[in-house]
Length: 249
Image 1 (cartoon, rainbow, N blue to C red):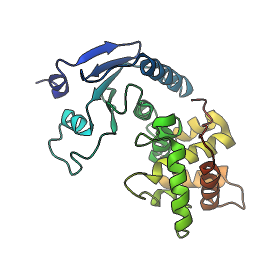
Image 2 (image 1 turned 90 degrees about the vertical axis):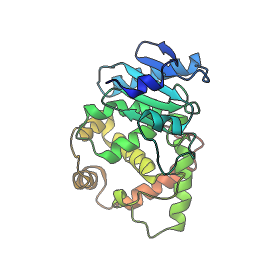
Image 3 (image 1 turned 90 degrees about the horizontal axis):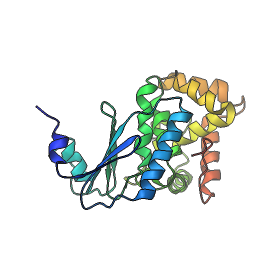
Image 4 (image 1 turned 120 degrees about the vertical axis):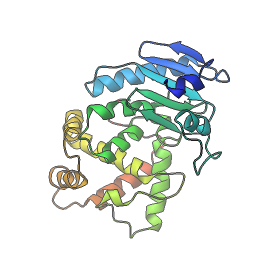
């Protein structure tokens, strides 16, 4: 018995750096600048979240179908439709990226912290992966791109109530609103409580009810609603050419 991934990638190129081991198809050219930026991002991530870095094995495949094959899926509904996707497998610290995603898929690298904060609410972890990932925040696009799309969508749908942000989980195939909402919730918490405040929230408030109670009691002012605050922040940030996170990434 052996891991099929290594059988499938037998003959692929291998390049190991300080904390990231790359295994990539011969059709991909590993760029030194991307490797350096990935190492820097990973180092900063571990420092910000008080975690010791571990070796990440980073697979770079041809496309999404290639990734799913490595993961053991022979058939899936979206087969043949995706060129940009990624996946983080936490048991082995495996990152899977496509050639389009490249060697510095920050979004997937961010998921390394998930196992160290088992009580963190899923919406915040989802949001964090978009919040600090720059141009590769979500589906290969920057966060500001998705914020603009959601702002336009919310203008057309005033009935959507973000006071329960977990309910707004689908918009279309191009933007998942949970990534934007989760990112902005991280931003709001950091603005009010700082980095240490976000870490404390990651260490508890795992249920949706607990997180909502915390936001309403500890973050919002008495005359504010989460719906109004999120809508206003989405609209404000939609005007920015580039989104700036508060963690220095």
